[in-house]
Image (cartoon, rainbow, N blue to C red):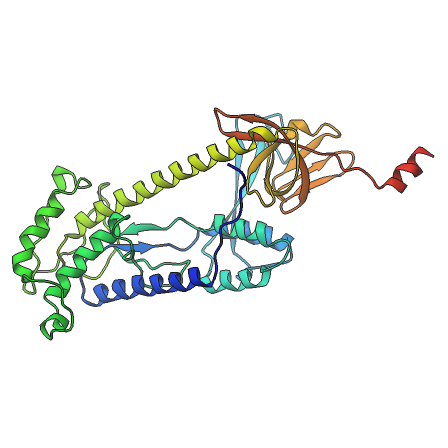
Length: 388
């Protein structure tokens, strides 16, 4: 490896992305209008607690999502583990009482995220707020029930454009082809989709679905699909709980089979992401191995009770500055403000601050990099004044 650079994303990339989004939405909407059971790519609304935490951090930078005052419920409990330690109110027996805040439902919309993204574009705090914004969102997943795609602001969405590299896209392709063979468009000669009628293909489709490795032997049931077949009602998932109410649907694949495919595909996607992340971490460790002792500019992207996580500018490599390595003062982590503050000097380390770090050590087994903060040197004139 010679360098790490930001991948290029120009107008051609964005144009193709728009085509792909349009195709995915069109196919999902078409199958939904046909009342056909299918796979959807869903992205649910963010958790209120995550939105509340992000709103507090964004407020420190002078920004807001525009959700207004968030209603919060406060709870208190007694810490039975360490009755005599830590600040805060205590009971008569000396046990420490802790208070937590849990936000209620937040009226968040994709438009609020979009407006904030436009406001911070090109600003120094864009990198950190964009990073935290993504962390406040849930992960997208596959489902046989359409819950919409929050991040894309799309009421109906699926994955259709990559059947040679994603299994859900292949499933949607197969469902669409079966539907088109018996559709009004095909009867009018508008959509040439190959020979064979729907009734001739039902057996083959059912057989392929039954042979799918993601379907257990106890759940190998595919309902016959035709215009006269009864529509399937709600079903129970693997935990025995009733699924969310959805419009009755019919199709080449039963909803229960689609449910299993969606669950396995979502899990496989997580495993693939983890494998990719592990490979990238290994590459970054190898790249930084020969740079121990070198200094870099970095951005504080996370503050925890055990130290600062710093991302190197331009290299996108993350490492930890342990709290124990800050020896010029006694530093304490403040959970409310997400800051580390020195008791005597009041020096503060917070999210979004730029710091200069030195590559201290690398743990190749755990794939972790440890940084050390480089002490800021005062200007030459100031140093002369101190000597005098």
